[in-house]
Amino acid sequence: MAGQDSLAVWSPDGMRIAFSCAREPSSWDLYLKASNGSGAEDVLLEPPSGEIAQDWSSDGRFLINQPVNEATATPITLLMNWNPAAKK
Image (cartoon, rainbow, N blue to C red; front, side, top):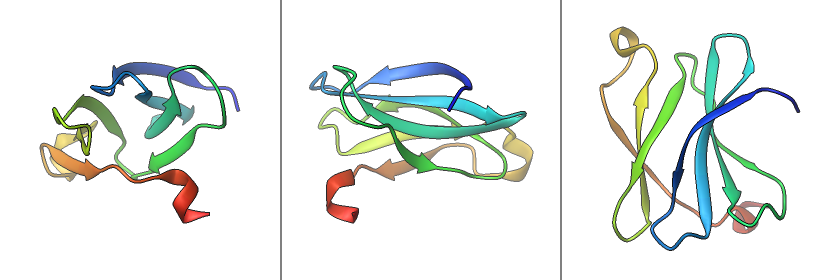
């Protein structure tokens, strides 16, 4: 689906890229994709205020993200990474 992809951050092992994407106007969601481009992208968060990926923890288990609208959400949050194949 077309959208504006931006603000990508590479995982420490270089295998994944987390990025923000506006699929809908004014709605920044978080996605995860293999860095080699294979497979589908996985939706990590679809919050109403929007989220921007900031960085990964050094072990790659957590993604540090920040809301687009800080007035309506917590300033910085951690999102634990999971294996997308395990949830299917």
